[in-house]
Image (tube, rainbow, N blue to C red; front, side):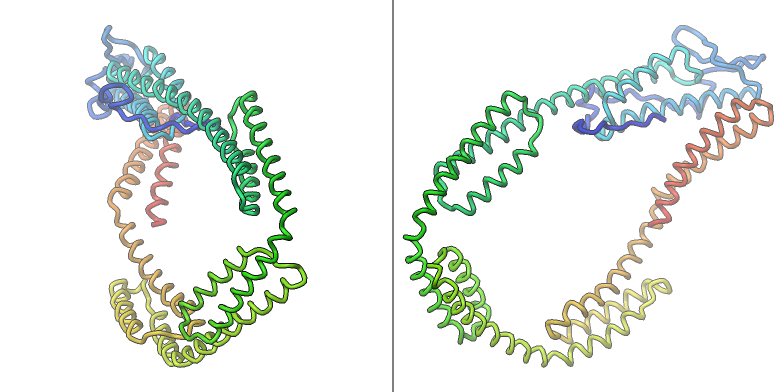
Length: 437
């Protein structure tokens, strides 16, 4: 089977639907194995022929068994090629395949059909190959277009970053945020690849000039900062007054939210004169600490009232953790539902126990859910059918190998062994997927 890989750095191709890839549906290719005599014959000397538009063509000699077995062998080889072509098409349509590799593989198969040792509908297979080649060629065009779009997007992104930097340099007065943003722009700038050297240099000069202009303005700002610190001191004293007034509040949620806002406003006020800034902070922090200490004491007392609930939930957890999903899943689900109903009726527990207790119950819930999901997945008919199909192909190739070896044809036996090994690998993967479920 053809294996396709996408090279690093190459944009993954978009899926190419049939209707869009070639303008019509994929030409059907009938499998040869159900009726191999439709597509070829074996003469009395064991020579195998395939029917073509130009007449019969010799594809090989069969002496390892009956003529019917020989014809079936070459029909299966045709079906293997047919499957390979379908896989190329599927991977192109899904976007997982490398269009260049798919085009090369499909072209190679097409060019070799005239000498291929197979028995099947060669005309239909050739038409399907032309269809796949068309898909691959369109996908290659899409890849080229995507690369061009990526280059254009990279230029556009750097232009946008340069525009933003110039705007910051000309207008921003949020010095820390703006400085952080310029550093972030620089970091992002380094990650944007694919711009041609000339354009990149021009854009870099714009960005660098903007940074320098911003730094000059910021330097002038901080030269005037001492004049602003008196205003910052006044603002902080106002915030302290409000913080101290709120320290006796019992409206826990709203007050805690307001303290959060006050903290943001404190930071936005800027620095007061150096000789008073620390003292102002200590007063502001003391007011907050007084409120949150009172709130903590109240919540601790409330949590103490929930200790009995925690004890009852622990008792339920002991029962829940004894649930044996392996013994009887339906009984386990029923028991869990009853425990969950009692759990909800019990009510709240101390805050520091919530995560622990809920986590233990969730572990039981997860175990039951996992067992239920596993039971469903184990009975998935599609996965089992797929594994059975692969197993059948392994047995077919192993049988071919045994017959060929018995007839002294080691070359054909080895080829059949290789094919059996490939299908066995797929079979084991499919069986493992079912087992893992």
